[in-house]
Amino acid sequence: MTTSFEPLLPGTERALLHRVAVAQSEGRSPSFVGAVVRDGAMVWSGSRSCVDGHAPDADTQFRIGSLTKVFTAVLVMRLRDEGLLGLDDPLERHLKGTGVGEVTIAQLLGHSAGLAAETPGEWWERSSATLRPELSDVLGERPVLQAPGRRHHYSNPGYTLLGSLVEAARGVSWEEALRREILEPLGMSRTTVDPVAPHAGGWAVHPWADVMLPEPSEHLGLMAPAGQLWSTAADLGRFAAFLAAGDERVLGAASVEEMRAPGSPAGEGDWEGSYGLGLQLLRRDGRTLIGHTGSLPGFVACLWVSVEDGVAAIALANATSGPPTAAVAADLVRIVAEAEPRFPEPWRPLPAAEVDEELLSLTGPWYWGTYAYGLRLGPERSVVLEPLRGAGRRASFRALPEGGWIGLNGYYAGETLQVVRRPDGGVSHLDLASFVFTREPYGPEADAVPGGVDEAGWRGL
Image (cartoon, one colour):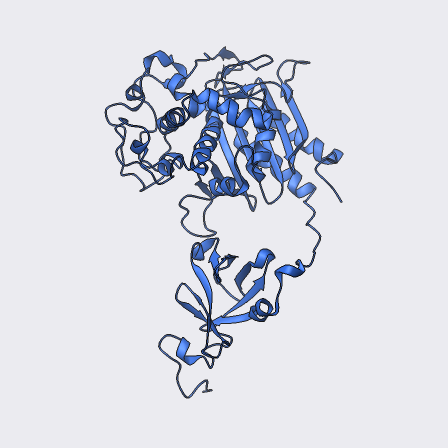
């Protein structure tokens, strides 16, 4: 059985390096680094450079731009998990005088607060932070441009507010909170707010000629929580492993999973791109990728994780535009996932303590009207309800201590599934958000079916 600690096959490694080489060449980037993490361990890294013999490696720093926002979001989620704030709290409850009204913390995390996309005045990514010494300089006279909660509208100033929220709650700088609460526990010693050698230089490549111009590297000041960080492929691999599984030293698996959930997709199964709580989500090549892109003058970056495949990829380049890091990172995930698909866990019976005759008697076919569903028993007394034929809503349910189950996903998320019994104690039907499931389609439990069932029963033509 293949494990994450076994090397990739030679053919897979060549395909990965070829993809990086094409990206560096066609994207006209001075250098390009790619890396792959499988089941929490880095299994490959490769690079190309315009200077022979001087290609960067997985320990070379690049600026990662808006990938910084994911770190800021994790710091906010830690505050939530400690009970210091609620995601639905208005920001003003915890950070006074911002002028953003009833905008909530969750809306800021998911870019649905209606705030402006950029700061007023000069292009903040390429100008001195001394031009924006106060939050009012970042937000301007009209910080909220749209009704909060109505739509996704990406906002860099929104993450400045979240960074200031972290500072107010912790009583230390955003940088100090980041180092103490995320970087040190995850062993990310090469992720810093300022470049530390060895690091790549940022370049602008002329769009119509093969010539370059160095880009300035400004400290972003108050905007740092939106895009300040420098990091390496190796460090981002450690962060990718955390985003896939969580880490109790930083943020538990349930909270990381909450960050990965799409904020407002059009419906279950019909979205291509979305945004969670500080994480971008993308559906590509039949798989869901979570992570973030990033760019600042001279640099572009991307980290994607396919939780289902157990594969993550990082792509870093030092050119202002051109290198398609988001597409490359997605391709690196696809190459490994398709060439060396993950082995499924061996089938094992449930522990004896989780199974009893009463639970087993509930499994099998149930009918909502004429729609056929199957109820299947899972671990820790959980159940799955799924259509047996045709279209239908599939959902998983977690057992409740007081009896019944709570929906975990899809249309029935948060809804209660419960067993309804007859006076003699026998099972009459299942009730799910007012939907009645009976053992037969419009069966003998006619009194349980809203509107009743015709007394003459089923008939032919």
